[in-house]
Length: 157
Image (tube, rainbow, N blue to C red; front, side):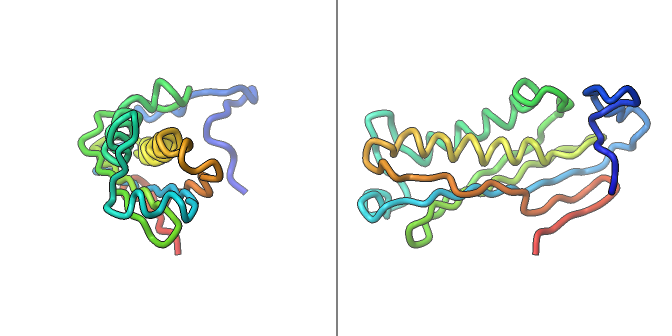
């Protein structure tokens, strides 16, 4: 098994040194899913619910992009990246809301955490804005779907 990357020789938390790594194009796609009730589905069947707080999906997309840009402020050992793009899509499939984020940058380290943060915060925003209608709404998963660039690529089967 590989060693943890964010632990130094003294077994303490440490930022990974990327100073010697080459700059490459990096992409990452992440997904969060929410389970919703039958009561909520008709209200969002046109891909946006107006709540007292505003349009749910548009607000969630903006929150996700903002979160991706602030990832190093939220995750202590993340490197600050010059995020070049962050796209978020939200779809409804039966009684599930699927949020996908794709982040891109040219850098020495990957954008997985930015994509995961974007999807997570977008899901939390949908939860916050819909909880008054659907008390049983649940964020069921958040995962990395794929990444490219750096020393290895990854794609979930």
